[in-house]
Image 1: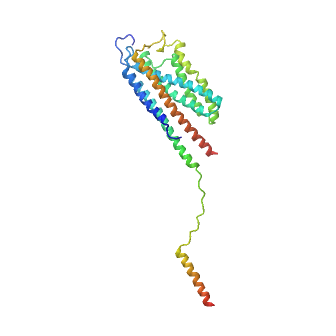
Image 2: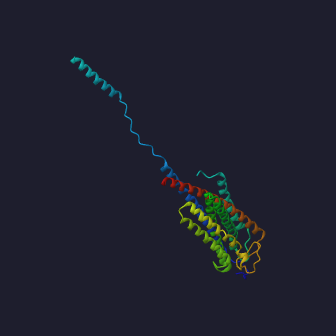
Image 3: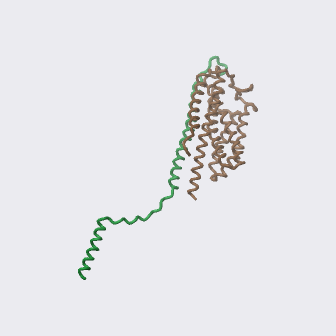
Length: 87
Length: 232
């Protein structure tokens, strides 16, 4: 090759070299991005799992409604009147 | 881990711009070498990646010493980041060298001292990651890794000086006068511009990838600690 007068056409090797260089670099940058994204997802999941679960509280008794209170009052009033009539 | 620091974002963009300029200088600006033709243009990236990779391996050895003295796992993460980026860059160096060798030496590969030491260096650091994968205890893993990277770091200067110490057909382009070398050439002024710019560009790209990889290591450490805390 070195005894040739004309410059040899080695552009194919050059193109292959640059394509491989950019490909390897792109793959590596991609791998850093993917690993970082997966770790961030793991971290979010672990943080969610680590958060303390709030204790289950007994539901407080619901206050009586007006109509219920009124009916109870009526019942007691009725019993009073019955008792007073017996007397 | 929070969002990326502004300095790192700027460095990311700067790296892409420098890579683009360096590619332009290598492919368009630099003249075609008369004897080898266009394949000589891979030389700029070949040297750029080789320089940063060997520097990274030596840096890793320095981080190993600091880890062994301080026992701080931060230095272990720096060491891993440095070796990983260097390993990728050195793979590019070897592949580009092989592509250049095909038309220059009429073979893809020969067991020349430079090529052999380069292949051994790459394999040493591939084995480094295999060793780390096999150890679960973080302190033990860091200790073994540090000793290994320290000893492995010796391969970087051996690879660098192989073409200056041994009989080899690999050319020494910078300050070399090896009569046995095959495929050497002297650089013109424009070639020197492309060459030194590639060295600068790959140094910046290395720093950028190194920083990104350190952040990934920090995140890995946090996730590992969280897993450990939950298992207890």
